[in-house]
Image 1 (cartoon, helix red, strand yellow):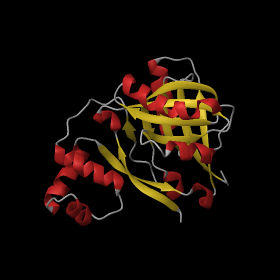
Image 2 (cartoon, one colour):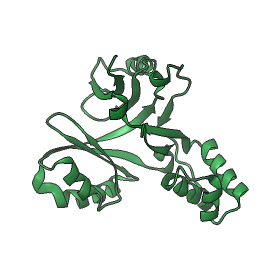
Image 3 (cartoon, helix red, strand yellow):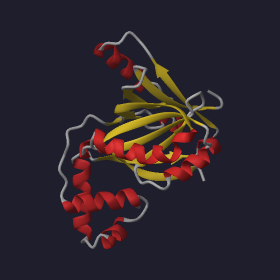
Image 4 (cartoon, helix red, strand yellow):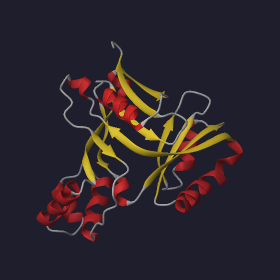
Length: 231
């Protein structure tokens, strides 16, 4: 019960996708918004905020035209309940392991976004799709479902790691049961590329920081922290 789900960390930018984020102030509650978004496969995340703009809807699209079609299909349904909206891009996201839980040294930082676009074979696409849909299934079961020999499936999965399409596997923890609070900070500073890199390095070395986002939103950087009740 401490684990909500287990999933591969995929760098969708290497497949040609960009994350478009629509920050909204809405009269809809969370469940109403979830039910609306369930009717479309286009939205990949819904993030709850605790200020005037109370939700962020994240879409993955390969072009502005594709994003416009995705967003307007949702907006057409909920527009009467939207008080304000803002759109931004998430360029790059740093994913940091929750080492503060295990009190171990953080050895790896995984970065998604701003990657060169790579071509995948049809077999690699099939393997990737199955790993995303059924990450907890055995490779033996997945290879049978893909109608591939076990060694062929395993080789194509290895290719996805080598190409850095799949970077790692993530365990999404139940923060409420573990008594962990989730905070998001919006950071503004005297911007320069040098200062940005310096601040990113400082944040990467903080044990409680789990995400750092470079974005076109009104702030220079965003970071998210998991903090235990005793911290």
